[in-house]
Image (spheres, helix red, strand yellow):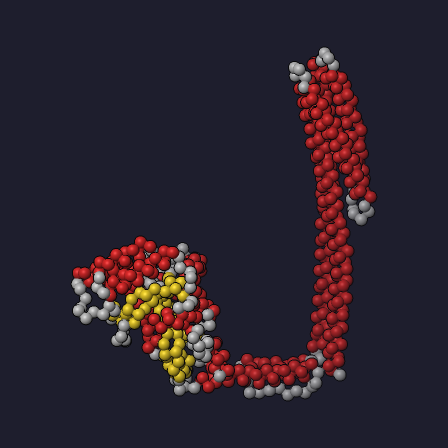
Length: 579
């Protein structure tokens, strides 16, 4: 019973509002059509009539010009009969055009007068039409008569130039009077245009006022009926409100009794179901709220066994990305500006990780740690995806240099923005690590440390992205690299070959190919202590790419070794004594 009553009352409100909407729409349509018709009359009749009058003046001036050219043609010695005939044709065509324009104006004015759907001043329009007829009948007739008197004078064997000049003077006076009359007619036409425009504005304002009144009436009726309906369902809705406030306060253990089977009863049932779902979500949040990356949460929900704290050893690829010159950049910024820069930078870099299916492990100040590997990526894809993410990060730097100044409103900010990336592939310990209060699903091991050290080693070589040999071998089909050096980082004993990512597969420019070949030659000579040969090779590399910092660094190192030779047991590896 209650359900039917609510439905019928709401349906009544809807029907009433629909009727009011139909009335408003019908009145608006009728009045809008009238306004549109008036606008059409202004643009297609009034304005066009004014254009015809303007063309009458233009044709009159053109006709007078051709007449003078006819006189000049006859006054030449010998007379230019061909030119005279051609200009006479133009003269006659201009006369016909004047009569046609006058007829067109007459037709448009009559069309306005005959249109009873618009509120035009037909009496004023009739007077304008009479003036046009008088002008066409009198002045054009007098002009034609004067022209007829002029032509015999021009065609006479002995020309009376004094009489010709007097005739031209009379023709000019008649033409000026014609143009003055047309100017007066056009002025009166514009007055009619303004009057009709005022009527159109009045009708438009009337339409807006009627629509506003009916819309207000609809709103009042809708509110009245809504209050009437709400008075019958206030009690169960109050119970729902109390339940909602309990949820807002964090109390999810209760429920609301379902006392009816109408819409309110169904809503109460849905509310209780929502409470149950919120309780499940809260339990899930308590279980997985300690994890950062949503992909980790999703994977652990689908595979709860991974949440165990035992840990597993897997081959994975780890990436560290750091902003170059962060300390210098932060010194000149307010805390608010620095937060903006960091958020924008980390967002831009994180997008490349996410786009290439990586997992963001943590943010460490201005640095990002991310990893790839099972179960988040397919086996064997981790190194390739990590290198593609690094290439994407390097590609975003140019845009960041433009975006950061716009973000802060400081022209110099971001001009020196750059990044350093280190990537390593190898066996790591992966699992849930932390305390009973908070845990993190993360990776640990030598490969993690190596990736971090490679990111820092970019400072020594002036490079931007260094990767381990294992990463290079696993991703070789997707990237272009060059071996930079063999190094021993802090925490390791054995030398590790490191490579620089130069771009995607097949994307190197000719000068980069030369750089890579010459650098490889220099590196081979360097490791066998052929210092002069190595220096020449690195200098050749710089000729190809003058800005190549690794080549510059190797030349400096060679110069130092020439001055002070390395130990006898030197193995060609560079040992870092700092992180």
